[in-house]
Image 1: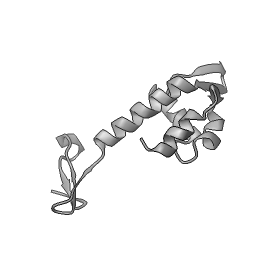
Image 2: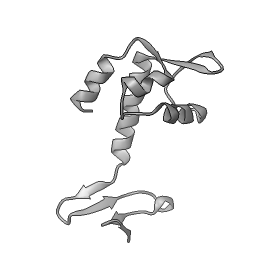
Image 3: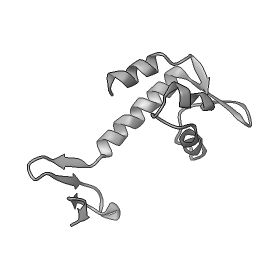
Image 4: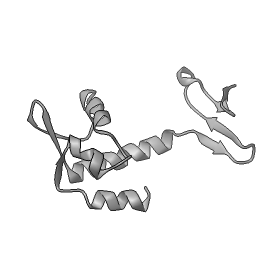
Length: 104
């Protein structure tokens, strides 16, 4: 995780609502994305203040965001510098290996 993001995370308030995420973490994750992930049970731990008001605690939100970034990085396509092609290793349901942007 880069230093800019770590600095942003250190400066988060102890608790914050979903709408504030846009100002607190610009370009990192959108409130709508959080709402969608929450509805699927994949979002960060939250406190429901009412039917329309969700609050996240800094520590659990940061832990969730770091874990999510690590998973995304682990699943990202790898770049083979020797052949200058993108290689994606995955299961056959997802298409297996890709090279140079086309299926092999």
